[in-house]
Image 1 (cartoon, rainbow, N blue to C red):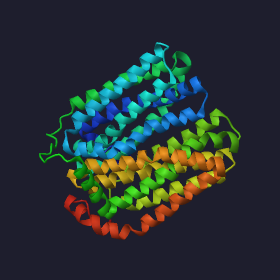
Image 2: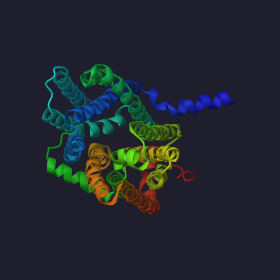
Image 3: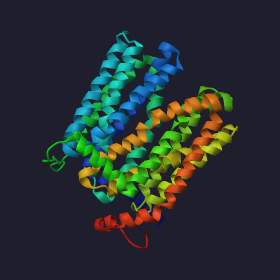
Image 4: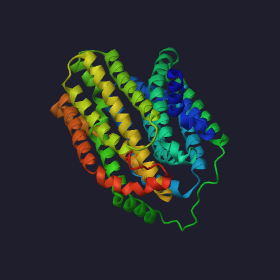
Length: 426
């Protein structure tokens, strides 16, 4: 009986992989994301090796992330009007070209910091379109009842690659230099492109309406703002991304000045956060349905905030590691649950725009949060900065939880139409 239960639990955890299209997507993205993390680590190391400037690290990270905030709504409009798979193939080809140019410059010994900055901005523009497209494309490759599982599996893949990619990059940088990381990343995009070409997807939407970009942007904003569940999820996610997610940029301060360690301490802290995030993703994947996700959004944001507060007070290494596990768990559960709820309740003709707002809230707010955290840490110290950020996350989770009854009433008809609602479980 025990073996049967374990087998049934495993099948439930990976049920989205029953879809051929999702298996292709999962495999292609799994290869590509390892390459992406290799490039991120190699680029940071290269910039610091060339300049020795922490400011340049921050500047390049900021410049590469801001396009997601500025261009996200435009990407959402295009995603709602044109063939998403074809557009994804274009973004992956452009990302491949960016990584290949970077590899040629580094391997040829001609790289300069301004070139890294320009290519980082180019990649930021590509990712500004790519992320909303990938998020809104998910519903086309898995049955809607498996959407939450697919998003959770995708999160587990992202966090697995976050653990594996940097390790490979460290070995390659030491033995062959940063250029090999960029070259292998460019090759890894071929896996995604091949998987997209191999998919059998029904004819995707192409709107026949006259194209008025400003009007459609306004329509998307009005829809997201007036539908309270969507507005509430996006506002909490934006708050957490602004004041909570920047904890990672302060980790070197905690590793060296608070815990009195070195680079290995930093690696263990970030690794613990990644393990916690992976555990959270696996937990979500094992859930039977999307019911109760609203409670988990509120609870996970509170766990994340409380973890940050406790971590800011810790001066013991092993305790800090445990708290990073908790923080990583709360972070990924809140992010993935928010994604699942939005994907489930959004109107199909506005999916791309709403998911572009999700990208703005999740990724677009982070560079501003990084700048804010740096300014506050310089004046107040890193522990107090993290404590304030964690406290804001907890307060945000409380306000979100207070609105849950009203939001349930609004989404109940949607769940009924989907056949996944029951009065006992809601």
